[in-house]
Amino acid sequence: MYELNKINLILTENRIKVHVFNPSKRKIWCVVGEQNEYWLDQSLNFCSCKGYYFTRLNQKMSCYHLKSVEIAYKNKNKNIDIVEFTDEEYDGFLLSVIYNLYD
Ligand SMILES: [Zn+2]
Image (tube, rainbow, N blue to C red; front, side, top):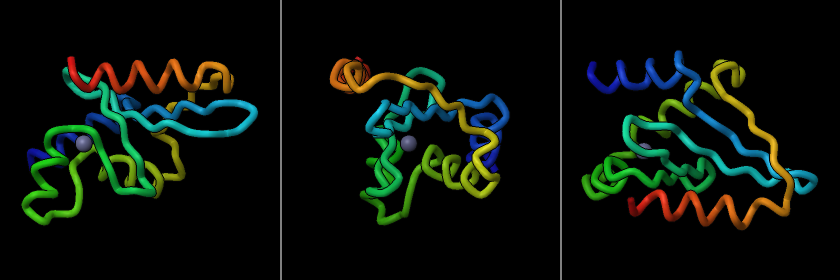
């Protein structure tokens, strides 16, 4: 139940962000958590949070960030916030995401 509440909050507060870089249309997915912003890759089924790391160690499938994105997809993306950037900004953005992980 606890996990479901967290998923609900992420969805109702539109905390899933897709950063789209133009013109290439590369995407970086993030979920804004309570303390941190987490980087996700749905195709790799990867999330940068600690919960993901430990659930994988326990042979479970994913963390609640990935589950939130999955649900948002099923809701026709209505809970996903799209932010547009240019390709020139891609490297800098990726670096800031990575630095944020080690805060
Ligand atoms: Zn996660």
